[in-house]
Image (tube, rainbow, N blue to C red; front, side):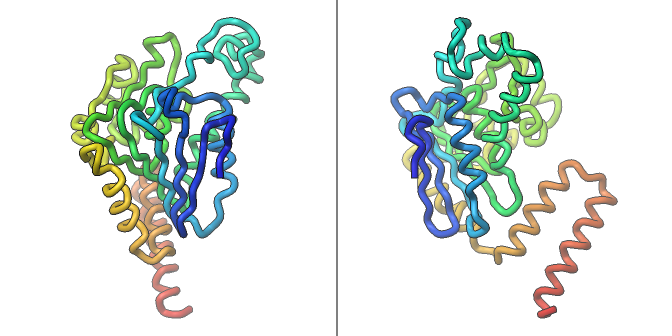
Length: 255
């Protein structure tokens, strides 16, 4: 399945859905159509999907926004100039729609993997951060240059980055806009695995197989606990663990 105007295509193999940004000649630059297509993929997921693999065709994962969106001239669909001239409520609602293309990657029931090679800049970096796990090639670079352009990361990037690397590192990465290479990303917890480019497919396949190995109910319940642990206080999280474990034990006991 593909969304040709958005350059997003999908392929299903049992419980695994692969979503590919397919605009390699433009380094998979993104537009509002890209985000609408991604949101549509999330809305169409069925309960049989357990792992979503997000990829970019060609030599880079995604170099961020399509250059046309930076045009200050009126009439650029989804352009930053048009957003800046729109009424506040309308502009915020449009951005809310864009964010929906990212936020579903951590929805209950699935685990998402970003397979990142080459550049992941701006919106590309935020798309990788939106996933639960990241496999990077040795030449991968993550970067959030928005503040250096007078903007902010607004595609769910800030909350995901803070969860992954903590407050002070997130502040430094966001405000300087500097690139984070694969080795540093792995050291700070942004990357789960770093491999040579030619091993990316195998590494993603191995991780996917490992994620699919546990029973589906136990896997989904554990993933839900990990996600809630980020924000719950210890007492609330302890209660969530108790509740989830009793449900597991009851199922195993045949109740």
